[in-house]
Image (cartoon, rainbow, N blue to C red; front, side):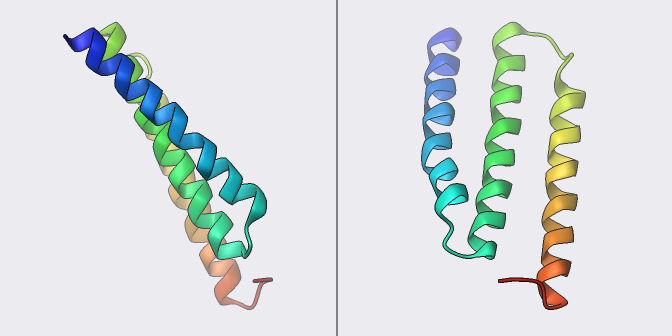
Length: 88
């Protein structure tokens, strides 16, 4: 049962990357792209965690943590850039 649930979850997560990628490419504004990139990073973290559940290994948990932290720092940096008058 766990195999079916994790496989279905993986398909849903990978399918949800498609509209997020479209939003990153089309925009229309910089805040839309920033939010879409943050959502994409969250989906990637979820995919890594589901893979850890599927395989039963803990090797990729550090990678998931690093991706989450880099995404957070990138979002904060872009928010500060936009606050100081960057392109919108």
